[in-house]
Length: 110
Length: 117
Image 1: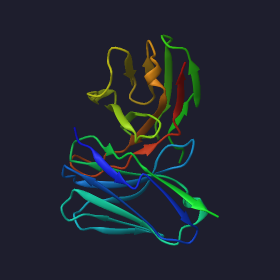
Image 2: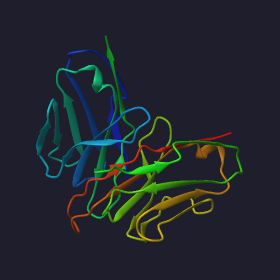
Image 3: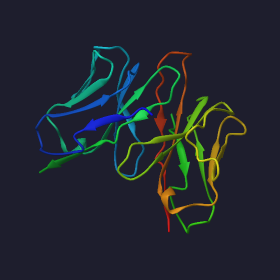
Image 4: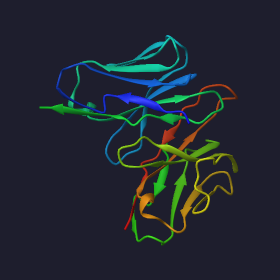
């Protein structure tokens, strides 16, 4: 079945640093999604991308839909303590289920 | 606007026992999903409902898992009998599909954390 490779698995950064994570797939997707999950909560949608090459921002977050439609990345600028959590990429083809990556765990050192 | 509600939030049972989870989606959302999230993994779709009909249950272990959405609103997911490997967070999500082929946004509930001993 379809699988997403999300990297890195975990990150330890200093507050104020920029963060970059990415997701690759062997299959083409029509939609790329980025979610954040806090402990004890369900995932919350951060950014949705619907067109190849699309670059979308949401505050300090920026995500891009790869030209090949097989990858996407998420950048977080000037990280703050509340950015701690697990970030999931997800891909979806028309009429099909959403496939999630295994997540990137972001830790911020004081 | 109220979000997706789930109960209970936590459940501990012994293997071979039965357990049921409840979900109330966002008002007006026709599509409801149940996901299983094992520790260290992303959510995996178990079943998708469109109103009270099943759209996709290809990844639901039907020998022990069942789900229903009789009136097209609330839904229950049942495991009978539970196994150790069923320990996971069970997430419910809902969406309001704008139309065929158009993107959707799924809104997740807080999940039910199940521990099978």
